[in-house]
Every structure is written in C-alpha cells, then in structure tokens.
Length: 112
Image 1 (tube, rainbow, N blue to C red):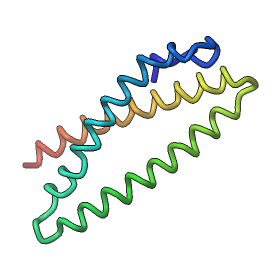
Image 2 (image 1 turned 180 degrees about the horizontal axis):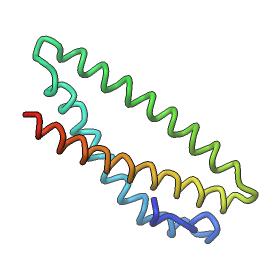
Image 3 (image 1 turned 60 degrees about the vertical axis):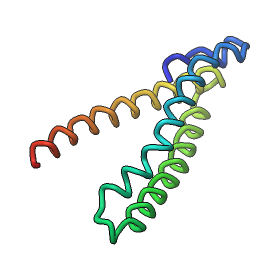
C-alpha cells in the first residue's frame, strides 16, 4: 500500500505498478492457501463448514473493505489526498492484522 502513495497525483499509471505487482503476488499466494487452511483447521467431518465459514468471511471482508476505502477516499478535498489517505488507512489495517496474527499464533502455539 505504501508503495502506491502519491500515485494518483503523479498522473502516471506506472507509479502504481510496483504496488500492484506486490499486491497481486500476495493475493495470489493467499487465495491458494486460505481455503486449504480453513478445511485443515477443522475435523474432517466439518470440512464443508470450514470452507463455508472461510468464504463467508472472505466476501464480508471484501465488501466491507471496498466500502471503507471508498468512504475514506471520498472524505478528502481532492482525489489525490483521498487516495493517499485510503492507502495509509489500508496499510495501517494491514499492519494491525499482521501483528494480531503473529500475537495469536504465538498464543495458540503456547496452548498446544
């Protein structure tokens, strides 16, 4: 997200390219791994439940993320400032999510 700061004001789509490539690679890796983890994390007789829960939260998160991004981006006085603000909020949420996952992972490993 941070690599795309200032891209809207620059007037060149090439300014977006590094961030889009990194985001695309990350998204591609997660799209393959998350359904597998969702099914493996539940007992075999509950595999459909794990897959359904993962898909439900994935779509709810996507919809909420798009709505939040649009709300933040349109709250600024110019499109460039709005885009930068939305990118910073997205980067902050991604960082908070990563820290939460690491903290919960350590906690979960301590319980095993």
